[in-house]
Picture 1: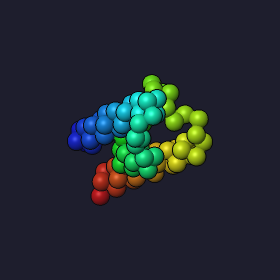
Picture 2 (picture 1 turned 90 degrees about the vertical axis):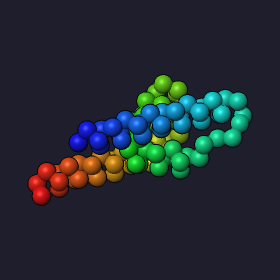
Picture 3 (picture 1 turned 180 degrees about the horizontal axis):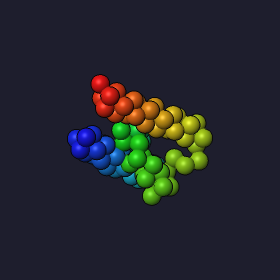
Length: 91
């Protein structure tokens, strides 16, 4: 179980950094990180870092389509992890 939390922590840290880099690139007119990359990072466990990145950097907070997909990735990730924990606990 500690392994799962470690992976979530590392992915969240990486995702948080990606949001910071993308915000900086947006401010300076440089090459941006694709939204699909940000969503994949969220889907695979970095959603908490993405949420913090949105709040801390005030980034991607007004694009309703982005936010809709982001929250869908959160729901899918949490549901999948909940199922996995339930399945492995009772099997």
